Image 1 (cartoon, rainbow, N blue to C red):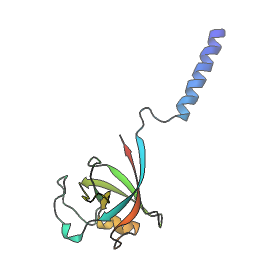
Image 2 (tube, rainbow, N blue to C red):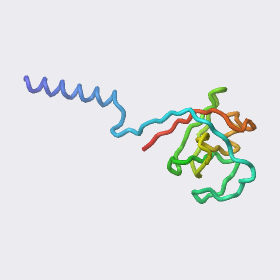
Image 3 (cartoon, rainbow, N blue to C red):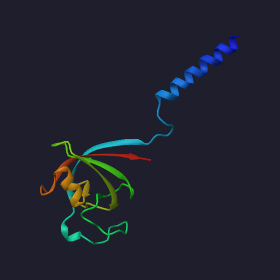
Image 4 (spheres, rainbow, N blue to C red):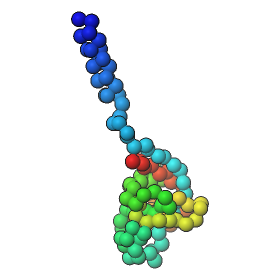
Length: 126
């Protein structure tokens, strides 16, 4: 009887732990506030580092270090608008700037025609 109670308690404890914790080895979420800019129209149709052509209407971005294919949520803190972009290029090459957005992504969050704007980045590393 004593062993049965101990076993029941152990199962309940483990079940509660499983419900309260996330999946094992869950990716870490990164949140940063950085300066962003966007691609000039002259880059339309040129090849990116990943090999695909840059298209202003696609939701893509350039980042110096994140792996190609990383999905980043970019938020404009001034208006709260967000967009999810896919890293497919390297850049920007100015140390002040952390990310280059496609024209469409910049328009969606309201930084188009500003040149440089403060944005928040959120992404998961797996």
